[in-house]
Length: 380
Image 1 (cartoon, rainbow, N blue to C red):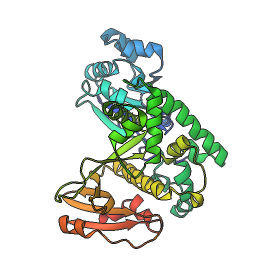
Image 2 (cartoon, one colour; image 1 turned 135 degrees about the vertical axis):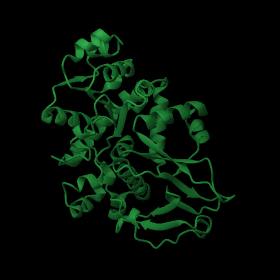
Image 3 (cartoon, one colour; image 1 turned 60 degrees about the horizontal axis):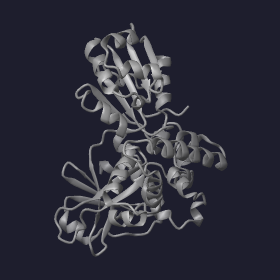
Image 4 (cartoon, helix red, strand yellow; image 1 turned 90 degrees about the horizontal axis):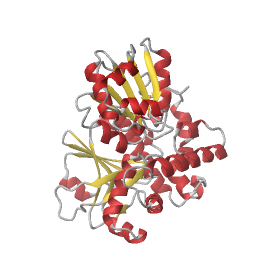
């Protein structure tokens, strides 16, 4: 069994606080809950938010009903809590009125669950996000050498648990197609405000073709026959549904620095490739540069999220096409990283050094990337 970074989660539980575990479906949230209840010495109740009776009780706001539901349990675990209308108010009653109770809930959409628990649970919750397997996380179970030998596999099939563990390529593709069909086309399309499902599906496929490139909302709207506000809304939903993540521009000192642009990356490359039905090996692909950039950015995001590394992330470009793929700002210092699949020599843009003297620059390629994925480069 592959140990997850947050496993075991019991040390994260606090009396009269809610532990909220966000993340897409099929990344192992339910597994963490089951591991918790199998090993805990606390008396517990474990339910699914899809249970109609649980929805009626926890969504009711009725103290007596909730008291009867809790009984004498010391731990309440609810999977897919975003399915319960009014869950935030119900959980507020639980943690406010029942001394010593510990609560953990999971949600596949930060859009639904955050909207429900955000205000009611101010000061009463702790939030973590679970991703598909991170490389540094897998390194606790597998030798780094073996993971590096499987690099091209990660670029094509991603790192969802079921996909990573599947022994054959066809089985990996089957799992990914199921994830896209059941999660993307069911859960995300069910989120608030999605009226034109075809538009959203076409949008996410357009983004899949443009990873690593600056995205123009006006151009997306033109191609999809939609207005810009609709595109903005759907992009927000895709981010909160853990399908994509955005990166904005660094703009501080130079007149010719590009501002107001964004890039979009996929949380998992297997999902991206499944959307486009692109399963060919890396050696025969013309999008390897984009795959490499997406892979490195997301792995860095996972590392920083799990290790609570606080930083602001940007990309940097001038109108003269000088650019850097990722700039991380921490404590007033900048770490600039340029991503290259091949081990080519790349010089730091002179304009960047002049305008950001308090910075370090590095090129991350397939020959040296492991230090980047494990945060070793941050210690320089």
